[in-house]
Image (cartoon, rainbow, N blue to C red):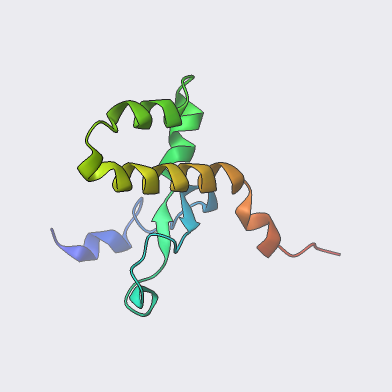
Length: 96
């Protein structure tokens, strides 16, 4: 892919605030210095497009104790996402 195309419509429009979250819990110690702690808010999309809870769907997949920690971390992120519905409001200045 030629990356110059990313400078053209519709790819140069940026992101809406409700597409991502600032999240650091999943990073390894010292990892914050290596990456930007911004993640795509997939749980929000699930909540917008489905009636069944995402937590139940993830718990159903958690069948192997050897991988349980990954599902637990995912459930933590789902909970964080639910509590961060309007995270950007704290960064918006009121116009006078």
